[in-house]
Length: 270
Picture 1 (cartoon, rainbow, N blue to C red):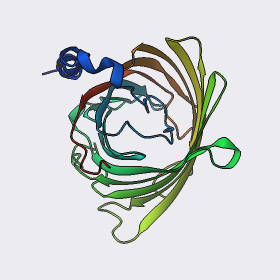
Picture 2: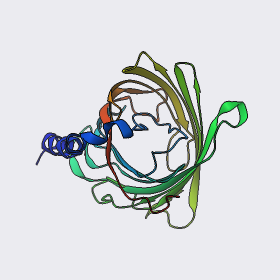
Picture 3: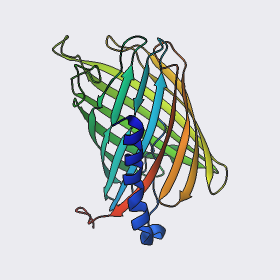
């Protein structure tokens, strides 16, 4: 089955709950994280299962290409606390020469806690911890075969019709099978600003950077996205991510959605 077929099936499965559960429309308000590199400090509504899913096609400076279906499931466990299950989804990579390879990507698990509202300079503040499980095929070149861990501080604020997100990240990368022992630290930072163009449309501009390490070159890139709020429980978006350094992709095109799936019993509800 080709990636277009996978994409069609995936989109159908994502949209069906939104059709079946229209009765909860007025009680569900999604909190989109994608398509930007930055995440907002505020978490998913308590008791809500929220899904973000998309398509992304990247082209690199050596003419190689990569396609993926990034997926993020967020569960609002309690006020200001969410559990996050993420992954690259279905991957297809092709080099400048030779056949392409395909398979499933790595899977990540994270928790995010918004520990302060309207703090210093009016910013909401959150802490996020995450772990990457090396589930992607190393033989095919789809993954590193090592586990990674990350810690992030997130700051968000609304100013008029604008929303700003500032993230500071520290990732501990596994060295891989060819370099056993120890880990490599990789700091990163991002700034994203979203401007509401009305009740339906918004535009986002972002710049982000990841430090170079012995495993990775330095990456600096800027991203532009347009979002359409179809309803309180469904937001669509698309855009382009253009690299600014040689270590970044030449560009990537993406499109996706955020949808509120359903309510569930909250184990930590007060």
